[in-house]
Image (cartoon, rainbow, N blue to C red):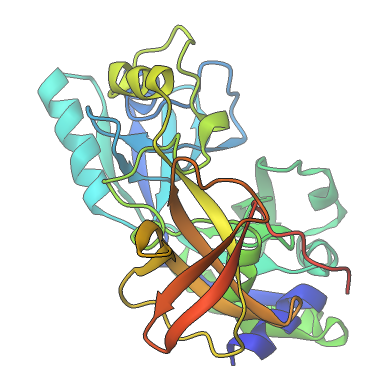
Length: 331
């Protein structure tokens, strides 16, 4: 199923029910201050209608999660995230700092449309104006007399949209209309695909990222403006990590096996008898005809082309370090 889903996602268009992706709303006079305090991403120049991938860190620089922040207005933000504990963290900060802001879970249920034909399908349902929505931007779209927000985002590298459905009674009609409009596009149901997201270097919180990691070792440097004139939790810790230099880094691995088991526990990456990293996610790649994996590698083992071994439940396999994202061959 994963492989057939993989090819369908890369060649056609899929509709995903991602309503588990909750929206933590921050609204009020101090909303912008609070939103900035939770991330090293500089939000100061963001305008309403912008989506920003924003790693969240604690005082030690450990990653708490990596939501997309939607700026709805100067005093209103959504944290788009599949973890309600983050809402408790943010609400606790607001209370402890005495900020004039409300933090709550908004009644919003995202629906994703992903794949190379997503643009055509979404335009058929919501109108040609969706072509004007830029990457990581959102805009209002009309459906059955109601305005939703549509963002050019999604947890795949194939392109598409996420529709923020804030009326539950319109969710099923929208699903039906998308399928009716996409019959000739081979539209189908789907979900985030393990193979495709590994190839794209998309990290999964809880698998490839935990609070034991910092964003600099997870290749999220571009989302951490550590010298900007902004105040955020963990700034001093991340500056020290940057100045000292990260000791680990997320890399890709090619696995020389056709039998790639599920990663339930981390697999050691080995040279001789020395453990020099661990695999966090792995899958068989139909595009490469070999296994692909994401691994956290120790300093000194970040060079593409270096041969290593991986200890898996199915045995020890040869592997080759590569950079991310994987350069997928043309179809």
